[in-house]
Length: 225
Image (spheres, rainbow, N blue to C red):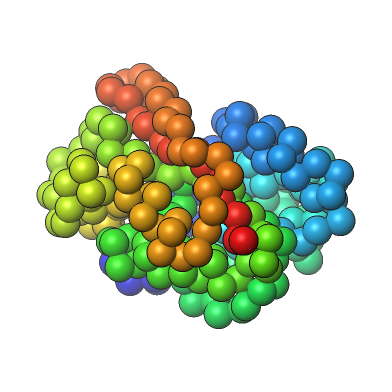
């Protein structure tokens, strides 16, 4: 799927009310706690900040955090909800950025799963380049334990090595989505010169009715040595 089509798809999702009334996830509290008072003097980036569900609580905690999202609709909604974010959030594709050693920390919540393995690897490589030495990555991303709901095709990999699927129906129809194994995350961390500060742990949630099954995400914290 091209970036233009992905942007249009996400605009439609946010226009339909995606995350409109959802509370922030608990991982946000762990990010704030881990960064502590030092984090308020540092500069961070939230990749895929959306319409602010998790970004706004981080900003309001006193963090100097910028945000980027591929969806103009999401950014417009975020600014309507929190005018103090003006000048801190912008529309763009992190996969196209090449900034080196700019950020003290990066937050990526449910965004590094979008694309095939090659695209995902590029996101981790860009993150490694964008972080200062000692910088941290706060990551939440798909687990292979997820019970995939809609009709799909496995394009590459498996539950042991991690896998990419292509949705054939549903809101992500035509999109490549990656699901990670814990061993795969460990390999990615080492390949991109990260130390694992918090070992990946799974968070499993039941889908909202009328949807069935469970959705599993890894949460982990990495650091550039």
